Image 1 (cartoon, rainbow, N blue to C red):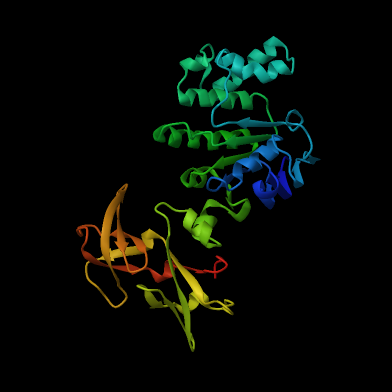
Image 2 (image 1 turned 45 degrees about the vertical axis):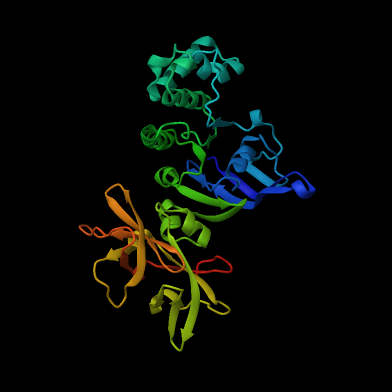
Length: 365
């Protein structure tokens, strides 16, 4: 059973004015055989966390535990982890076979055993016919599989993936991420995967660790972090197109509570805020995913008004970007309705699908 534990890990680069806290008191556990994705924008600390597990960086504070061993101070070669890089890092003067065999040769394995292991893993990855080729003769997807094979042949305790698909074209990326997830499940190796691509994270992760500015914002299954975001950052970062976020005020009149923005005002359904501690809460942010906002042909009592800024198509769905007095709103356009840019339009919000956040703390109410 191999778990990876981050125990209050902090990593600081530089001193004084140049001091950067890349990872800030991070604690979580990657369970045995689990594939955990570290997701966040550039500078969120995800690659630094991966490098800390690999031993390429040493924590300023805290410990990293792999299995039952504290590896915080151990050199990379003693950690029994394998890392797949964004650049594949193949030796250009070695054939695919020799690239895959290289870590086994370092262990001074017998030649016949090396040949057996290389051919075995090449069979799994469907690259046996490429073993004689040099890296320059391989496509991006083929190089990526050779790099994977080099990691798998070592039979490590932990796989580390540092944006391994970012150099592939869009179609191959989609195909390969499905292959990677199935491979990880078949091999049963505990894995940590870094990406800034939320679609990639949602499709392959058992759990996602959402990071921003070195801090963990939320940990959960893809469904949990998407459907139940715990703060404004997670709500705005996950989703394509992104969630609509509208700033306003919380108005309480007796038993009734209202959201009051510049252009969007409504009574908040009672069940949304029932039992919530609202003491000191004044500024609130409304969150509504574009799929729960609809452009309508006829205004009703619950419709809001704006002006069509532009339309965009994502697959079979058409979205409108609607300009209001204080923000832009993305909404789904009903089939058969074709408003023109600049037209006055109306939209409704499904009140059963809204999110409310404390604007000052960013936390979900």
